[in-house]
Length: 85
Image (cartoon, rainbow, N blue to C red; front, side):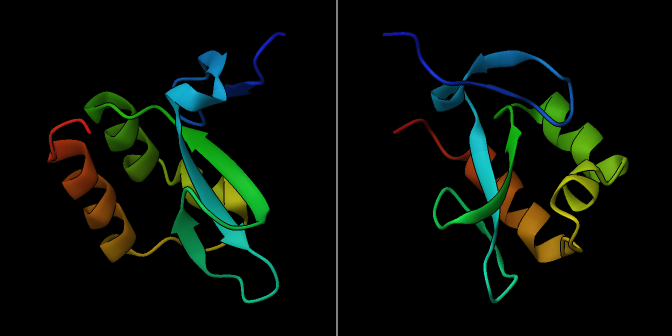
């Protein structure tokens, strides 16, 4: 069975969705969260270059059609810095 492919909002690389972080704007409360929930989703490569470009060019906000706080980006940077699970 072929895996589901998604595209990074920053570098536009297509890969299986397990290779990305899933950022979700949930319905109906419009909260933005990481890896869980149902609603509008955007996918981002878990590397510094893609995260830097997504933050600099506000790509997550445009893709999710919702403002993304600086605190959320700080949480992503913190998750990027932690060792792999």
